[in-house]
Amino acid sequence: QDTAPGGHEHVPLSHARTVDKLGGGGGGLGGLAGRAGRFTDDTDVGMPGQRQGSMPRPFSICGSLAALGDDEEEPSGMDSKNNMSSFSKEVFEGLYDGELRLRMDGFTLPEPAPQSRSPPLRLYTGAQMLKKKVGACEDYFFHDDHGLGVADGVGCMVQFASYGINAAEYAKQLMIHAAEALRQSAGAVSKDSVEQRAVAALSAGETNAQAYGASTITVLSLDGNSVGVANLGDSGFLHLRKRSRGFQVVTKSEEQQHSWNCPYQLTRLPQTLLSRFPRLSLDTASDCEQYGFNVMEGDLILLFTDGLRDNLHERE
Image 1 (cartoon, helix red, strand yellow):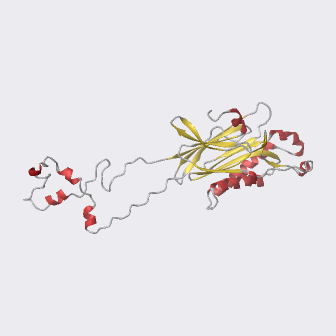
Image 2 (cartoon, helix red, strand yellow; image 1 turned 60 degrees about the vertical axis):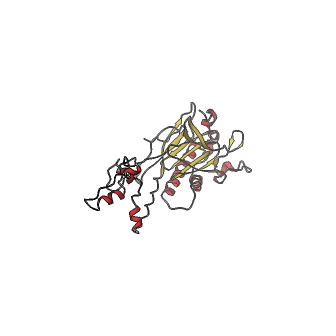
Image 3 (tube, helix red, strand yellow; image 1 turned 90 degrees about the vertical axis):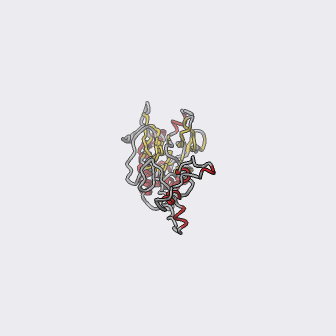
């Protein structure tokens, strides 16, 4: 069951698996992450009318000779002069192509039917936010079977609460509108790349959020086996793949920092506060970095705020 969004710092997780067109929803976990998977049918495939596990009997020259008459014996091998009589009839049957007679008669076999495309991958997702020891957590996230998002609201904006600043509400609205934009694009026919869809969702969050505040933001979109990520700030993602010695980092995001501890971030301020800082230059959705990569069944994608990156090494 999906974890209800709350006011905690979190790490998103998600698994991607292939499903048919009627696939169901995902589940809940800690952070934002996704794993890719595909359901396969292991049923053996045989020839029409053939029992599973049996070998098809090819067209037999020996069998044709046996049908010539009752007074003619079916050869079971070469004659004794060539010392080949010890070989059975089946040995010689295997030397002939079962379709040889058809080709000699001018019969053209139909082209094999093209293999159907594999079902699209989906995300099996979950998320977790950790409460702060003191004060409210300004982070927020969303996760479903085609997308993930995480926003890290800037807690120090609380000093401007008298102007109506609420970083937690701003981060929440960014995620709500970004998630809605991704859901709409998932079912629509579009020429946009999966990276462009992620950027469009991030932009939708910026455009439609009405609360005042500041936040970093990361949005991920999945289409088939292609993933696009739009990232602004020091939140980010890791794309992991299982190897013989454990998970290996395949792709990862880089932090966007103006200077130490000063990450890129979306900001929406009331005019009364903006007038106090006439030279203030704000980051926008167009400043985000885009990432595109392919995923495989079983891959793990981890989205997180900077609290994870600052406290854990990649090997951990």
